[in-house]
View 1 (tube, rainbow, N blue to C red):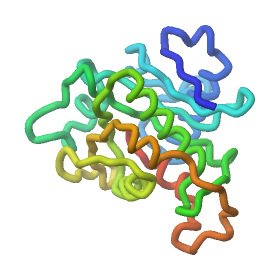
View 2 (tube, one colour):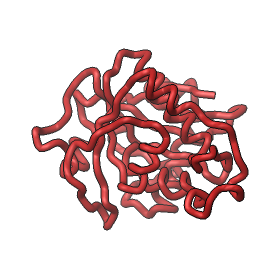
View 3 (cartoon, helix red, strand yellow):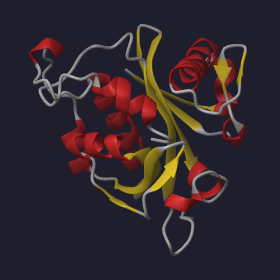
Length: 219
């Protein structure tokens, strides 16, 4: 199921929040070795102090995936951390466009895939993101991600265009995208019938969520 709460509401969601920050530490610091700060097994940054919205996929209280949403009218990762991949015309600033970041899936807990090789929970989290965006009147989502994930997002049904040029951060080819928010996108993103990963082709049979989602800089 999808659960959402703001940073200012963490006191009412302490068990889930602890799982979320711990998952971020495992995925981004311990597995990907990003230059991040982890304290007491929790990965947090300055953007978590801005009352972002967290969207989570859970199963009977266990966190399976999560992401963070911030308005582009204030500080955000695209503007302040990865400006090189932004639009030549300047930073995105619009109350109807929010930024998705810290997108991660617990690939140790989730091994369910569709026929296209995309993790079921990856689709569920994307569906939750764009459903929230549509319900709250947003017109676009912006995010930063690597080129491998870009192909996965397009295959999943996301509709987007690059904002700027490809730039390498720590050797990883990275881009930013402006994503369409619409019912048509949500319909495309809904999880497909599940298959056994062993039944996938050698190309799709790779643990796509394990590589792509943990490699994602923002989305």
